[in-house]
Image 1 (spheres, rainbow, N blue to C red):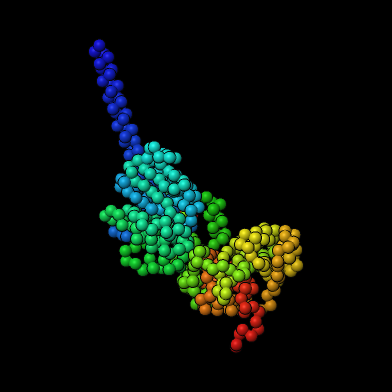
Image 2: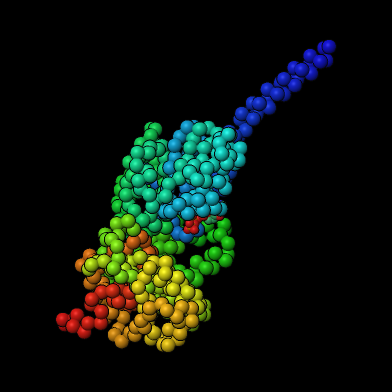
Length: 436
Ligand SMILES: Nc1ncnc2c1ncn2[C@@H]1O[C@H](COP(=O)(O)OP(=O)(O)OP(=O)(O)O)[C@@H](O)[C@H]1O
Ligand SMILES: [Mg+2]
């Protein structure tokens, strides 16, 4: 009898103990997660101790920006029960693939035990991009393409990934407006910099804590193949100073375009009027070796006397691939014509296009004047505020803003842009355009 009593007491105690353990299991896992990051993170990746409203991390590709943002969100959420945290990425795809999913995303860091029980998909809803944690904290994802979804929402903390690639500045304004819960609402921004207005404005503010870093600081955690690709693409280029070393590039004296000329006229896709004409322009690289140039493929449209840059799909392609890409864009965007520079490829260019599609309207264009002479009237259209970019085309814009008469590199994206806008504009080939 006595033994039974003892056994009951013992099992009660065990039960009690394991219930307590179960209760505290998410807490333990949460603590372990924070400790793990404290051991693994590099000094610059830790949330600054001093006061700030915004922590702006400007760092090169692969530095660990996303991981840093995700770890900050999680540490905050674990330490502040019932908090509301916003995560904003350039697009819905980025939100799912990078900030929530992905190797550095929230889902890869949060232990399973820390999700709230009883919610669908163990505390994570893909359709709502939402995570609910065991302590009631909620992490909600937004796409920067939808500023209105943020309207009226309020948060304790926010994380903005790749802010410099956001299409609409008003998304950031809406987010800041809603960042007003709790005693110390703060925002963490992780981005490769671009000289956009948002970034240059933030750099001037006193309440912004800035951390900068370059790609190679995270060398130990990057695949050597990825590092090789980055080096091959950006070594010794101006864009590399931005993409690898996080330098905020400034305008180049003598360049035909300035960042402001492009930035100030950037509009949303919804703001674009119906277009009268759309042209896909190609500046083809006819060889396909490691050292060959990129093929410029840029799509522009016209409405009345205004012009719109719709797509830049330039890249290193085999001839067959660039032809297919251009034809696909032609149909996808309901274009009127493909134009291609044929200086190098001659008839081959048309033959390639015709092999894939015998009916697509096509005009070969031949560069008889120098690049600068062709580019000048197009730069003038920008100066007259008649050209808008629909979205951000970083590599094209960088080529534009660094193109001076002395430039040695061949700016293929810029060439394609110039061909597209030349075809659309009335200034085409006019020998009288220049007064001097
Ligand atoms: N301190 C660290 N310790 C271990 N791994 C890290 C550390 N920081 C980052 N990483 C890892 O390095 C890789 C790159 O990090 P992450 O994706 O966060 O970089 P990123 O700067 O956002 O890159 P991208 O420019 O492509 O957006 C990821 O696998 C990430 O988990
Ligand atoms: Mg990232």
